[in-house]
Length: 473
Image 1 (cartoon, helix red, strand yellow):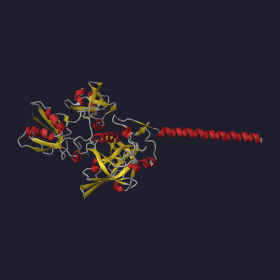
Image 2 (cartoon, rainbow, N blue to C red; image 1 turned 120 degrees about the vertical axis):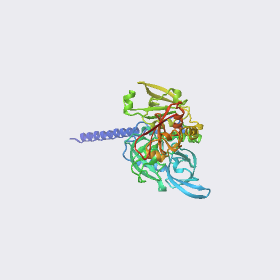
Image 3 (spheres, helix red, strand yellow; image 1 turned 60 degrees about the vertical axis):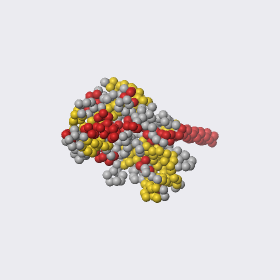
Image 4 (spheres, rainbow, N blue to C red; image 1 turned 45 degrees about the vertical axis):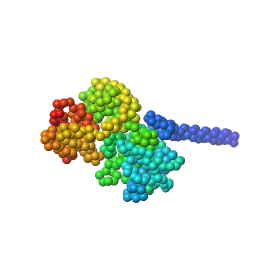
C-alpha cells in the first residue's frame, strides 16, 4: 500500500468519525430538548400571570429514577414554619411545620393547622435566612393557608398539574421539620381522590393524593413533587395507629391549591361554587339496574331545590358520568373538581338517565350564609319529633367509617323515643336520602310530606349492623 493510499484511508476514517460524533450530538441535543421542553398551560379559568407555572408538554415525570436534580430544584424553596402562640410579648406555646415558596416575591403555601391560632409566625429558609410572615388568608374547608414574607428573588417551586399524576409514579416528599433544613424522602403515588374524614370543617373538601413517601410530624405543609421538581401536592396528614409513619401519607392536590391561592390573593377568602346535590358511588348491582355498561359515575340521591343543579335539570336517580369532560367516579373527585370553580361559573355535566347520556350546563351558585346555622333551623323538627342531633366530629367519622349526624338527646314520650332508638345513634340516611351533616338532615325533614312515614337508617359505634327506625310525621 502506497503512502498516498494510506493517507486517503486515514483521512476518510477521520472525517467519518467526526461526522458520526456530530450526528450523535445533534440527536442527543434534540432528545434533551424534547424531554426538557415546557410550555405555559392554563389549568383552570383562574390561572394567570401570577402563577405562570410551566407544565410538561407530555407526561414524562415518571421516567427519571434519579432524584438528585428534582431535589436540588425543590429543597431551597421549602421552609420551616414556627407558629408562636400567645398575647403580645408573652409566648406560651409554639408549633412547627413546613411551607412552600410558590413565587419569587415571597408567597408561601402551607396547611392551616400548622399556623392556626398563632400570634406570630417565623419563617426559616433552607439557607438559614429568617423572616416574619403575615397571613394573607386561609381556607378551613381544604386546610390551606397562604402566607407572605417581604423580599424578592426567593427560590420557589413551579406549581404542576395534579390531574396528570398517575398511580405508581415516583414522587418526592420535601419538608423542613424542626428547622433542620430540608429533608427529602421518596415513594410512589399509591392512590388518588382519597377521603379520610380528617378535616374538621362545615364543608370539608377531601380528595387527597395518597403516597408511601415518609411523612412525619413537622412535615405538614411541605411539598410533594414529581421527578421534574413540580409541586403536585401539599403534604397534610398520615394515617397511623402508632403515632408514627406507617406507609399512608396524604397530600392536597396542586390544582385545588392553585384555585384557593388565587382566591385568597384576590379576595382574602375562597369563593366556592355550590352544585346542589347529594351523591353516592355506583355499585355493580345498581349499574345493572340502571342499564350502565359498568359501575362508573356517581348516583344523585338528592337535588337541592333552586340550586344550580336543580335549575339545570339534574334529577334524583341521575348518574353523573363526567364534568367538563373529566370522568367522575367518587364523591371526592366531584368535590375537588367543583371546588376549583367560583359561583357563576358554568360546568358541562354528562348524566345518564333512562338508558341514554344527556349533557347539561350547570351554573354554580354560592353557599348562602343564612343557611349556615342549620342546628337553629332544625329546632322545630327536634321539638316535633323529640330528639336532638349534631354533626360528627372528625375522629367520629374516622372511627365509624361513615358520615352522618349523631343523636345526642331523646325526649321521653316523643315520637323517636317510641322507636326504641338510643342516644349515640348515627343517622346516615333519611327516607333513602344520604345524610352527611345537619344541612342534609334539615333538607330531608323539610321535604317530608304531612302524614308521611319517616325512616332513619344508621349505625351505632359499639354495635355491628345497620339499624332502621320509622315513625309518622
